[in-house]
Length: 619
Image: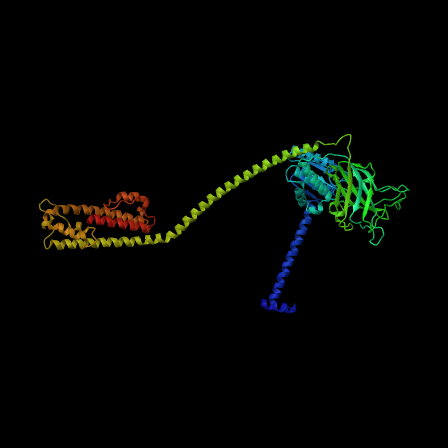
């Protein structure tokens, strides 16, 4: 019925084979289940973001380090609610956004960390921040640090990467950056710009022992080589109108943009982009708010180089930011490139940096691939001498102590783990040996069970058969004795005694003889013993002794049979049985430890002992 239904459905759907219909149904069901699963996951994620995370982002880098998004007006209340619920009075907030906001909603201390225009904190400030954070976190085990930027996470990521390397959680800041970006769900290749990576290497060199000196340098010139960027129409005569800005210690030192006759102002100094390297377009307008009075010189595709001659007094030291911008005919400005560096790491020949080493330009298709920036410097001997900050040495000492403490703690943890592993291995081995012993015992019990049951079942039959054989042998022996005496009664036979006081031997006593047959060697020997009167009395005494020993033998034999068959006498040990059994003249006694374990072997040993004893009596 079902197959006909599938066939009709297949005909309706123009499917010839019913199996194809089944396969399509399964595929449709699987797709529906997968879509339902995705919808469920999406709903759960949205629920968590809305009601648990309160539609704001806080990333946990470690148990005591956290990064949050900028507390804008529409999110500051939700951010404060989450942070206050988890870390009230135990958190320190670093504001690296260069923006201000209402900090009263946070039950914590908020510190504004300003380093105007630089993509990363200046080196000295970076060391001071690491020391300050270490002091805060070590003052109480429950203290935490929360960091935030403005339009992204790059400044926060760079600082926390340096701090993780500072206290030994990572070997160097570049490795730490991978972990931080992973926590932020960002690719570190695009999360930070070339200048920020440059400062990560600066920090590592300082941790390795290098102390940067703020030696003054004179900037001699700036040249853009390797092709002219195309920021205007490709067919235009002028495609590039650049101007240069030089920043040092948060101040604009020099700009190549010359004010026009109408007093046009250069771009505002506070417009320097803070993080991403992609600042918004700005208008360099005149006083009347229209077109700027003067534009920078223009360059076209045919120009091989764009030079800028700096004034002789353009001096820089320490952390420096250089920015090149393009001004369109309308007066709007675009950042072409940006470069942050420290003068202590500038080689004598100056700096030559390619496109991939320049912020913004590295990802801009309007900048030629062979483009590079050439900076020329001259070292200047200062009367004040080179300035060396003691914070670098202090940071190295504290970092070394933290790394040593971390090394010792990890060593103790490793030893504890090794001890736990050894203990677990020992217990596992004991359990394995115990399980193996139990399995072996169970196997032996299963294998010996049928044989033991069969042996116990055969014991009664074997015992009855042995008794019948012994009785037959006794009857044969009695018949042989009667035949030897002839027609005389046993009491008048000369072979039965030579005096009146001699006790008479009963035929019943003879019938208890343990001989196995009338023709046995013992039987013939006994007949010879009766033929002479001289041997009559010893034979009579020996017969009585034989009867007593035979009775004892049967008692022991019955007890042994009951032991093998599981009767009441089974509790008799091998040693007690050996003590009760008459000693055999031939062969050493079998020790108790050598007794057979199974019922069949024990029975064979008992029969062997009976045979030995019979041979002794007959001998």
